[in-house]
Length: 345
Image (tube, rainbow, N blue to C red; front, side, top):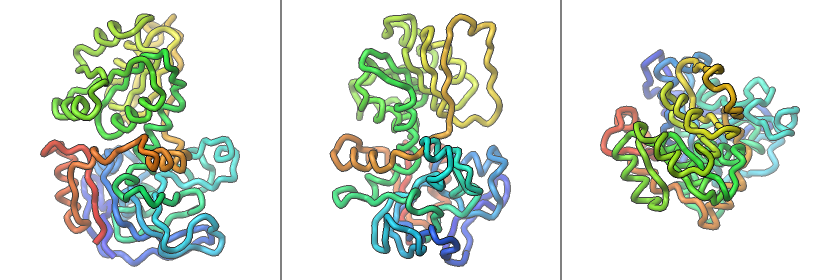
């Protein structure tokens, strides 16, 4: 089969690989019908994810059809359309039982697909612990509607959940890229009093204003002022940082009111500094990633009910054999790209 592969730092390439096989009784083999490119894939390509294994098939955003299941798989069967969770989790360890599936103690627990084991930018993928890692897609939900459930939409849902948003809150979301928009959609479900999105890209600002006209949008140079002017207590009640830069990290805590919650979703390529003397007295609570992707069934139900729609994020579509072109456009932010959909051959 064709599989897009991490060859070396800075180099991905298409390779012919053997079809994956069932190797554990809780495995499933999924034929990938749609996949996508995530910024985390670019972090792997650029060497910012040191545990990534050279030679693995990349990709962790995908949907598909179950082709084969191991003898202990109970919740899905061949022929089922499914979402694939970004995380592998056993469901039995202390962390899984408490909903912290990102910290599953299995050897492949947490984020493994497309990182430590072969992922889904391929024709087929093996999914360990399929009962936890796969969710059946409702009949009234298309593959495109479900494409982001297992990763960036799960991330946005998790971020909104752990931020403890109330209807009285002003919520600041820093970053209006794909994960930021998914976080926005899930924050909107909480119905806070005000939502502010900070984004520097003119194209992404136009996208947000077009699709979500009730949202306050600002740029980094005006973010602090706009946040103060739209807050009751000297800053945002909840801040969700999705952009992943030193400037956005500092903006997050500076725009928060005293005793606010600051949720860090972003993946940084270098350590960030907490300037504790400068922060002293703000009494902030920081919550940090990565996503606990255990809400996929609930998210699919919300999509089925028409309460979440991420299809506007898909701005470009390609066949798997044109994935190099898709990466070039996505990595270089060309042609107004938000997200790509990669169709299996």
